[in-house]
Every structure is written in C-alpha cells, then in structure tokens.
Length: 392
Image (cartoon, rainbow, N blue to C red):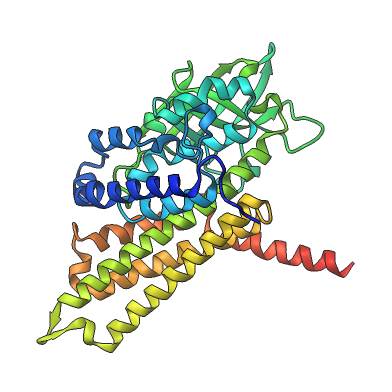
C-alpha cells in the first residue's frame, strides 16, 4: 500500500505542484506561439525551470534533486501536458528515461559524477536507444561496444534522440562484442557528448512539438573507460532499458491527460462563446456530446494514471500497468485533440490557435516510449502467459 513519499511530504509537494501550475499557466501558456514560431524554448523560461529544480525533480535529494516519486511525478506531468510539450521535453530526459537509468542502475561513483549536474540542469542527459532497426524493441540494436584494453570502443548510430543537440551526456545502449555466453548481450554506457568520435546531426524538423530538439547521433570509434559501463555490469543493459521505459510510460500517460484537459478546456471555452446562426454553439446537442466524450476520457485517464503510479511505486505492477496507462491515455488524448479541432470548426485548423498546435503535438505521444502497437503486445502477451500459468 502506498503511504506517501517520506522525502517529500504532502504539504511540501502541494507547494511544489502549486508553483509548477502557476509557472505553466502564467509564464508558459502566454508564450506558446512564440515557442512554436521560434522552434525554441526562451532562455528565461529555461532559467526559471532550472531555478525551480525542474531539471532534477525526480532525482534523489542526495544528488541535489527534489526527490519526487512517480506518484508525485505524474501530478506534475499532468500540469506540463497542459502547455507546449517542448518545455517538459527540455528537462524530461534528465528526470526520466536517461536520469532514471543512473538512479536505478549506476554505481555510486557514476552517480556522484553525473547526477548533481543532471539535477541542476548543468548537464542534459539523453537516452540513446532508438536506431533505424531498433525502436520500441531494443533487441534489434546494431550499435556495438567492443572490449579494448579494459575499456570499450563504441560504433553505431542512433536516431530521434531527444535533447541530443544540447546533451552533455549520452546514455548509450549497445550490443557487446564479442557476444557473452549468457544474457542478451546489451549493455549501457555513459558517453560524454564531447568524447572524440561523437557527432550530433542536424536538428530534426518535426510535425509538431516545436521547441523540442531531437537529432541523429553517430558514434565512430568512441573510446570509453571501464567506468563508463553502467552499474559496472555488462548484463545490466536490457533490464535498465525496460525498467526506464516502463516508468517513462506512466509519465507519458500523465502528460497525455494534461494535453486532453487542455483540449477540453479550450473546447468548452469556445463552445460557450462562439455563435452559429445566432445561437451559441454550446447549446447544440452534438457539440455537447463531443464535450462529454472529452470529459469522460480525461477523468478516466486521470484516475488510471494515478492508480498506475501508485502500483508502480509499491511494486505491485511495473510492466503491464504502465503499458495499459500509456495505451489508453495517449490514444484518448489523440481523440480529445481531434474533437477539439472539430468543436472549433474552421478556426481549429488555423495556425496559432491552441488546438491546432495541440492536435500536432499529441500525435507523437502514441509513438515514443513504445508505440501503441507495442503496448498492445505487452498487455495481450502478459494476459495469455498468466492464463497459461494459472492453468498448469
């Protein structure tokens, strides 16, 4: 049973959540079009986020973070999802899939070396897993790490790597050469961005989420010492990837709920004020039905995310539950954004109208941290395996 986070009691967390909500609603929302037009998060917003501790809110206090657990994380994520997702992306990898690999699997020396800088925002950590043939399924990795004189030589490339243009550290997943006799042969390495042989490609041009940076990363004969191997253990890799992705899926589900809430709020506001043929469109029953569908999705998603986060923290379910939450909430957010555009009519198709940006932004949520199709395979496969086990 979840009994709260002793490091950050409820009253302290309430203050943090209130500050984040105010930051999102009063500082970020008014500048969404600026972020979209410039394809960048303004420096003053980045500085304020760092000052608030947002680059390390999920990093333990021992290393300079705020020490929030996943139950508290999802509450912040629902606020971050209310506005331009680029702002959350700016510090998302530090707290999420990259930072959590170090928190959960790093040696004390590795944590001491990297986590304080990650928590402060002085170091941006990027999670370098995805490749052209290995996205949602890490088993297809082709990047290699060959043993060499006690250290390693890394060769390969990664794509769609969030925060790569700004990264100070890459958390790199690679296939070991020679392949070990046991395990799946995937290991994780900490590679400084300025290491010789590391090259970051041009910033990707994307459908949405302007201001969030992704790029290809190339590793050409990159030499790292034995201290770069996460956990000091070559068998840690695959487990680190799966654990970090599962936690990240709960976070993404919460982001999706925040996006859907924004879609609902924009829809209600427009329906209550716009007119058609002399009547307020919110009086039309079919418009009310669209609002109702959005509301039901938001409330169901919020409840699911909170329950999933609690079960993750207690250890009751750290595999199937995160996939259930991500699948439902990201698909629901897509429907909510689509309905928001429909409620707005032609106005919803116009650039600089909030729901137009939202419609494009949320599409990515169904792709990263494992596609909707991968979540269905995880859920369905687990149900079948459980049934077979119970029948024996």
